[in-house]
Image (cartoon, rainbow, N blue to C red; front, side):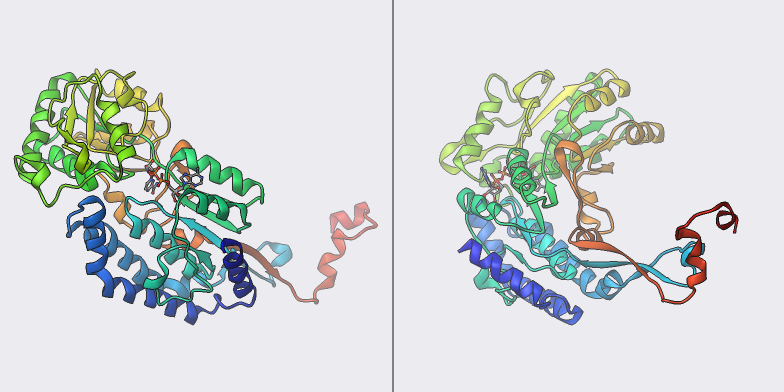
Length: 438
Ligand code: NAD
């Protein structure tokens, strides 16, 4: 089934069906209509899946998606236009330009934690770039099923798809599967975008408004029950402010979810039993400073903070991807920078400080896929910024025009005339000194 769908998409691509700009705009508008019409159903589905608040799905997935579509519709002609480049003496009377052209048939593999944004946002760029591809739920679509077929499934369907040849593979998920995707793509020399995860640090300087910092961190850590790829994974701070950080988070949790988060309509659940068990194992041997309660029958884990976590603890070895927040103390900013740089390059980095020098040093002396200063997650929302990882947290980038570019080949074009042949004499043999001096 997968093989035939890929073949049909390739035939449609070769027939040029996905290329006309009007067609791309019309498909993008269909996608927009589907999202607007089905907002309620989409939010209800996620409420059922992970008890996500009805308000969070529009806020975290659909508004951003609609902005991406509007941007692509309004800018497509500009993005797809040839871009003239500088010429040299030998090409001064020729046309030299970069022409974005669709890469071909692409495969998008989305993740479950923000299923609409993580599957459809790449799709927006793929449609805009003129590439047919695979993914999103078919019955919901007014899109061309031939050009944009969908496979709903798990591991075996993904493995089957990965045996096919594509012109680009765009994968969002964990890095273990990321390696399998890259391996499978390498067999066909297919380029990949890998949107992976990792441990995103959050450094809180002592010179900061802790009330504001704790509120922002608590929001970004516990939304979607911690299952957000760019959630702050752990906090780094000096021992002198640790207890105040804990209290700030405790107060904010009370404000957000009340005394019993389990009964709050705004607090989510863990996606499945495997992840629930994994998180509970991570907590083993620790006493939670805040939270720590759980209920396996509901896959509920309370928003949990653990303080004084040693760097070698299991909680600090793998990405948490759940509502557990360890605090590791560092002696100063040098120690914090060293701690971050000793580990894999993170997907996101967060710094909270009122001190410009601290901010400057953190930015200059560390690296990460993206960074937000004095807030969390928000760099994701700006579609002028490229979103993606670096090193183990991923390769490639998307959002806005960056997605269009990811699915385009930027073809180098030089168009010469057959005139002015005398200019070319210098490069033809036989060579001699006289010609070289001309
Ligand atoms: P997952 O286990 O659902 O896997 C993701 C995809 O890989 C699914 O489509 C799944 O079917 C497929 N898959 C799983 N095992 C496979 C195998 N053996 N062979 C082929 N395909 C396979 O996802 P997950 O790991 O629970 O997702 C969480 C991870 O994703 C976290 O690490 C998170 O940070 C990361 N993530 C990253 C981003 C980003 O934008 N960078 C966004 C969301 C999630």
